[in-house]
Image (cartoon, rainbow, N blue to C red; front, side):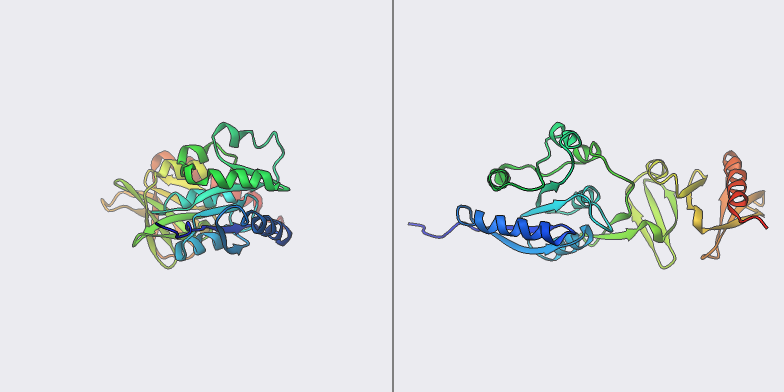
Length: 264
């Protein structure tokens, strides 16, 4: 006869507010009396949660949505890149109207202040809870990402958008260029342009450049010896080609730069 106890559900709490974490912890202590669970840790940001999950075993993540550095929706998008991500239940202070998107997309969530009966019901569903899909997350309200997920050696490496100098389209992937290194990203340049249009400028069919990284434009010659415009970068010596189709963005960028300069 097997008398071994069931393995407890290992839970990580992610919330930037200490009182909210403490309330969840207290409720989970009460739930422990009727369900085999174990709180393995508490973190304050989405970045900390991702680091914890990649280095420890977590079965369930109870995560707030509004957190510094990285919100819960972006964090969930990065979880999709992991080989064995934990199940995820959002804990939110959104109004009932705002959480309609969660109901419509079958995403489990808990409303703050969390009630123990609702928490218990959510935990009992975890064994049958399906992992979140990309489609579900795309239908949730979210801002542009602040980090890019790079898969290296079966791990997810997060590159801050603020560190990116430019994106370069090459065959079926995109090269992400920072000052220190290059990374391969399996996304389209068109999608990146749409998501980061406020901060990046399309200067060529193959190049999307950070506006802050552009020092100016000069006349030069391409590999065929033909005259063309080139973007001069602030922190890298290389110059990037500006296609004829994108000459208008060159003028637009110059006009915006001049308009933003303080008048003498």
